[in-house]
Length: 425
Ligand SMILES: Cc1cc2nc3c(=O)[nH]c(=O)nc-3n(C[C@H](O)[C@H](O)[C@H](O)COP(=O)(O)OP(=O)(O)OC[C@H]3O[C@@H](n4cnc5c(N)ncnc54)[C@H](O)[C@@H]3O)c2cc1C
Image (tube, rainbow, N blue to C red; front, side, top):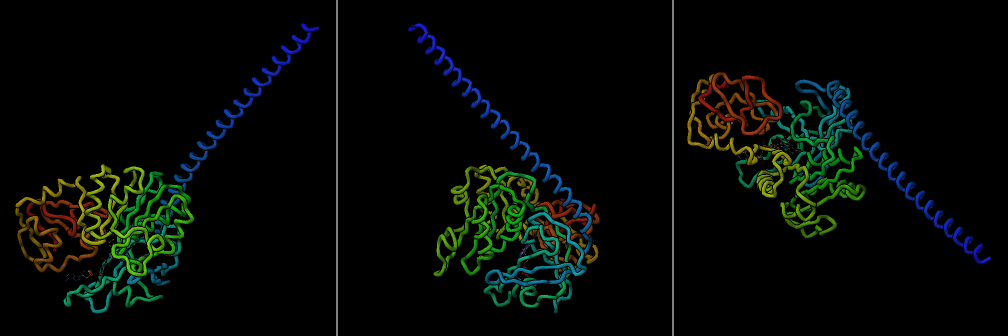
């Protein structure tokens, strides 16, 4: 009897252990297959995102080539919206009502403006400040260049024309979007967008593009501005940050006003610096996009390089003469900074003058010598207005142009003579 009981107990405990073993085995296998399924699903989703991105890029390229245009196209100002003190956005619809080509977030438009009292059309570039996902309009946001404290210096010509004279319904002549300073939308690498003053416009286009694409890319937006009066797109930026976990907004006021409230209107009462970036970034492994006044960009680019950010991860654009040079372009500096003097002949004006590095670009040399037939536009190699034929000799570019000039011509605003040259001006 006792033996029978012992056998029963052993059988029961054996069966119990077997049940536990089988249970564990099923559990582990279930987990394993759930994990495998999840992994498979994640890989499938990743692949799908990649496929969608490639398909989207193809569609964008197709639309670009279908809808782009050469030369200047007529646009109607469809809206004019105040964004902050001295800053207005202009919404532009094509006068022919045909669809617009998409652009890369960060690119700009070039305007050919007929300003009353000006003998020649005035050429100026303005960055597109919204994402490319609006096929029926483009938007630019323009700061009025106010008069300086010197009585003989007038307010900015084009920006005042936009602010004071252009109104809804007026027509302007615009070149197709261009420029090399744009966000690579096919990459997932985290990004840092830095805008100083009106230099927020290309970064804003990039930011809106990231959000609208549904990308979860980690994005930091550093915006440096004097104070609340000049703080453009405040509500939009705050809303965007609240609604998107991957977007981090850092607003710096350099001269906060009495009404400005920290942590409500802005985050820091200081200028943007790499020390500030380090407080928010996990490492220096980001793509950096900068646009702002030359003083801000000069110091930030140097500090980023000192923080071991690779030169090709630092992207910047100057709104005026291109003054920032990365150390990688040290060669450029060396080759133009010697005391070497070369002769520059402006053939059509029949004037020969000597050039050394202190005289800057060929355009600056021309202006200093009263040569009037080179048209100055952006002064940063972007708008192509200053392209002039080189009749003899060679030039060297200080910065890459927005798009290359034809063989035998150069962007005079960003090039210097390499040897004695003859220019068709
Ligand atoms: C790629 C690119 C994108 C840009 N994007 C934007 C943008 O999104 N928004 C924006 O607002 N701007 C942008 N700009 C700048 C814009 O193109 C113009 O340079 C700007 O609006 C000033 O032009 P303006 O005709 O009003 O001023 P200008 O008449 O060219 O004068 C510029 C400044 O120089 C001063 N000045 C004029 N004459 C003299 C003189 N003799 N001596 C000393 N100073 C003088 C003026 O008072 C003014 O402050 C961009 C520029 C580039 C190259």
